[in-house]
Length: 338
Image (cartoon, rainbow, N blue to C red; front, side, top):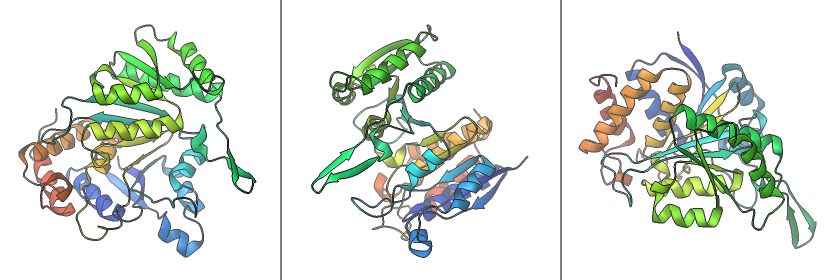
C-alpha cells in the first residue's frame, strides 16, 4: 500500500537534498505518493507568510511529512516555521538519535545516544515582549502536563530500544520552580519504569561530560531550549548536523526533517550532503513500519561511507549531491535486508 506523505523541500539547499532523498527512496522501491508543499522564505516573499495554512492542512491530512531545512531570520523577520509546525500540530516530542557512522572521522568512535527534547513550551516558544524601550521580557513556561508527557515518551523510547538509562537534564539549582517542576514531573513518570535506570544532571555539567566522555550517557531528556542546544552539541560528536536525523512526533502524526541550515552560499551548486535528511527519512520509514526498507537503505549508506566510493565536499570528497545519492541507490539495489 502506498504511503501518501507531505513533502516540503524548504529553502537554500533544501530542494537539492530533498530531491536526492526522494531519488534514493524511489530506487529502493518504497511505495510513496508525495504531496509537495512549499514553506519558507520564498513563500513569505510571495504570499506574505512563510507557512500557509494549506501546508498544515496537508500534514494533518497525510499524518506524515518530510521537510528540508527552512531558514529563520535572526533578530527580526518572520517567526520560525519549524516552531510553528511543531506547536500547531502538537508535535511535542523531538527525537534525535546520534550515532557514529562508518568512515566518518570525528572526535569519538562508537557514539550511540538518543536525545529526547520537549517541543512545545519553555523559553523556545518565543513568548516575549518589550516592557519598556531597552527592556525585553521572555517567558519560560514549564507545565507538569507537558513535562510528564515528554518523560513518558522518553522512558517508552528507552524501553522500546532496549536502552539502559534516561538522564534528565536541567538547571533546577537556579531555576528552582520551572526546572524543579520539570524534574518533579519526570520523577513521577520514572517510577513507572523500574527497569530503566534514571539520573539527573545539570545542563552545563552535562555539556562538559558529553565532550569528555559521551559514552556515559544513553538517553538524554531535556526541556525545549536545553534540548535544542545539547542536541547540536551531540551532533558535533559524530561529525556535525549534516550527519544526524530528527523527528518531531505527536500522538498521531509526525514531521521528519533535517536540522542543519539552508546553506545559501552553496544552494543550487549540487554540493550539499543529503545524509541528515536521508537518515530522517529512515526514521520516517520505521514510523511507517517499513523497517526492512529502512534497514536496506541504512546498510547501503553505511557501505558507501565506509568504502569512500562517493563523498560530498563536506566529507572530503568531490561527489555532487546527486552522485552521492546515485551511489547509495546502486548499493541499495544489491543490499539484502538485515
